Image (cartoon, rainbow, N blue to C red):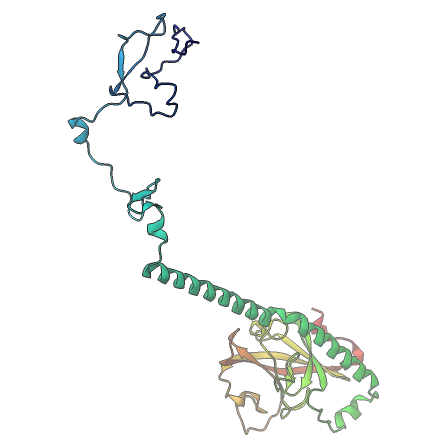
Length: 329
């Protein structure tokens, strides 16, 4: 059988190709095809019936010219932009990744890693502190409200168990000093639209969930200065600074409502204990009026000052007459 290559005429559907040199002998099937010496390709005309050795030659690649060499180089990349080649770099040891220059360990990479890790730790720590602060300010409101509800129930039960006495007897009876932690009254502030049970004592344990009464000051309605302290939290006296002159503060005891009118406020240092004197800011002076003083931390989120609100009793009425008209407005 003849194994010589056969040639056929190209028809109109053939695709233009380059002419391949003569194939190697059959017994050398893996021989390398010789390189085409000519840099041009012979493209046969599609309307010819056979390949024409004299077909038009078309250059396969345009060699560089002096004009090309004179062309300006590509502009440099913008500042801050690093151009990374797309192919690996060949070295004596083999191929090197184009990213090896940017991923190898160096002083700069170690410093960046430490800086990045430190930043992440600080951000995490900051978030934890913010969450804790949010819990301290707003998260405890539900806890305080629950304790306030319990203290108000205790107060109502305490008042219900006390024997009823007439106004004259109540006025002449000697006041009994309550024990620290006991619920003694409730304070109502219409402007803040809130009320709180008041306990005896101003230690941190006493005023944890309620305003506390300074034990050495007058009791509600007495001549002197009925003074209280409360935390600056959203559940207690967060907005005490909103009180203005003329606002009402009502104190309810077992028998009597005492209605006080705000006269003003001041900001002092924590050492200014004269604000709770029988006559506020005038220690040693003999009182002639029934006064009220409320103290809390200032500013919000801090305690290096004290916000002090003063009030003077304007009237009183029996509990049996219902709530004061000032609370209904």
